[in-house]
Every structure is written in C-alpha cells, then in structure tokens.
Amino acid sequence: MQHWYVFVKWNERLFDEMYKAYLDGRADIDPSVSWYKDEMGFFEYYVILLAKKMESCGVFGVSSAEYLDYAETNSREWELMGQEVIAGYLHKYNTEYGTTLLEGSPGKKEGVGRRLSMS
Image (cartoon, rainbow, N blue to C red; front, side, top):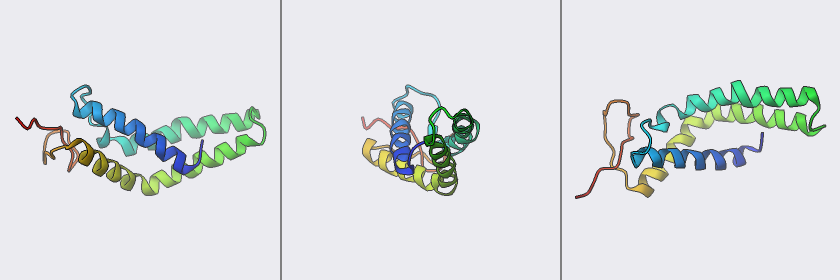
C-alpha cells in the first residue's frame, strides 16, 4: 500500500535476504522459483483485501482510498513487470555473491544455483 518504487525497494531487500539464505544453505527453497506467483497471491489474498477492508471501515479516512489504489496499481505493475524485476534481482545478486550457475539442477529455475566452493 505504497508507491511502486517503495514496494520494489522493500521487495528486493526481502528477496535478497531469502536468496542469500538459500545460497548459504540456511534455506532449502530457492525463493526465485515461486517469487512472482507468491507476490501475486500476496497482493490478491492479503494486501488488496486488507486495503478494501480499511477503506470500508474508514480507518484512515480519505487515505484509505489512496492505499487501495496503490495496492491495486502495484498488483497490476507486478503482473506486468514482476518477471523482469526478478530477473534483475537474480542478475544483481548472482553477480554480487559470485554464484555459479547450475543449469538443469532439480528444483532450480533456469540460470539459478547454489554457490560452489572454489577450493
């Protein structure tokens, strides 16, 4: 329920945290595999419903309609640009963390893999 650029900023930070945990072996699931779909569900089943409820309650006055508009707009933006956004995240963090790509690994999205030891 914030502007698109604010949403992407915090979305990327959460992705980074979860992706790094995966690369370091602290998480079993590669978040990039379902990130797009999971965010769509988060908008549809949580954020937009919450914004609608806040608007109907009038809890934030006139700002409630603005929050609902941001939620719906961000959901549409994510639907259109989410895959591209995730590709950008992967490029950035695979470069930053020195990830070696493991093509065709079970459960892996194309171009994604755990870091391999250089020893």
